[in-house]
Image (cartoon, rainbow, N blue to C red; front, side):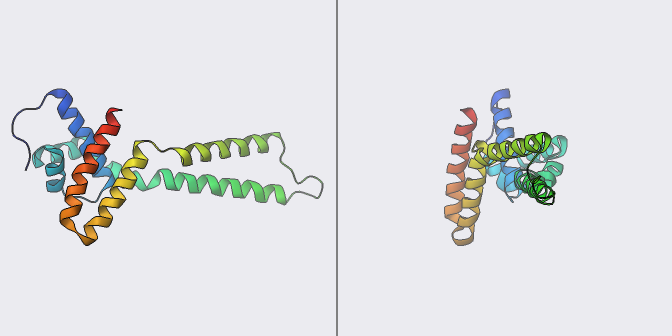
Length: 155
């Protein structure tokens, strides 16, 4: 059940950040979100509406994985373009080499990014896996996962 009493501005902001993170990364009801973050369902509903979380959630799939896929497609297209050049000229010119370097660098950075989003992805997948077999364990682990994510957010 949601915690009674007033929270400080910092506590409320921290809970809002956690709620947003959970809302955007998990398929969860507002009631469950309320219980996990310790704020009322009314507050959760207000945040979702005022902050536009529903729209953000719809756009989430267009992030990391699709960006990587797009960059790999660009790299493959560049490779095909170079392969179609006449024999003896099948190498990248300065601009093509620069573009290839830039794409490879961007891909490497994004693939190696193991910040908070990676942690959230792993924790979310694990909790969803547990829900299929043992809902009670999933709830307990979700609380621990939330605590760990809060710890990571604080640094």
